[in-house]
Amino acid sequence: MRLASTALVLSLALASCPASAQGTIGPYFRVDFQEGFEGWKTLLLLEGEPVYRDAPVTDPVVSLCGSVELMGRSTVVEMRLVVREAGIDTTFSMDISAGEFLGLSIVTGVEGSRLLSILQSTTPFGYD
Image (cartoon, rainbow, N blue to C red; front, side):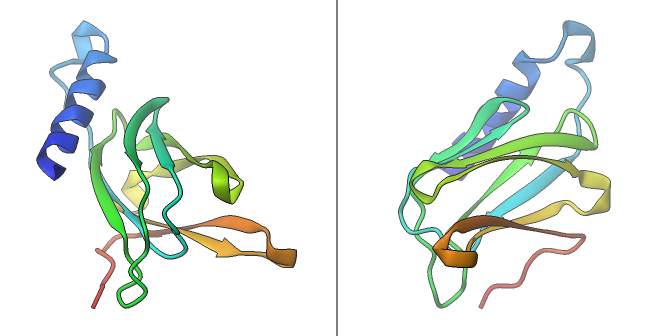
């Protein structure tokens, strides 16, 4: 499934680029879905195109429920995470040159509201 997802992302990225830019390969980065995912329908969009659609459940032992490897068209990419059941619909930008590993978690805020926590790193996150 991971290979198919990566191929789909590459196809989407190339299809949405102008013909003159299709020979250019952008920087790769990895998104880890970490804490707080409870089986809700989750959608991640990269530059407006869906690149991840699943209902992940965080494994409390390792604080990870899934990941996806993506390719940007430039070093700054725009992403949107939608988890309607958790009340999250957040658009954010990531500068891949500041770190190619991104960790997304759903955390509980004031009065039980749920918020998106975003961690960026130059090294892979460790999971035991």
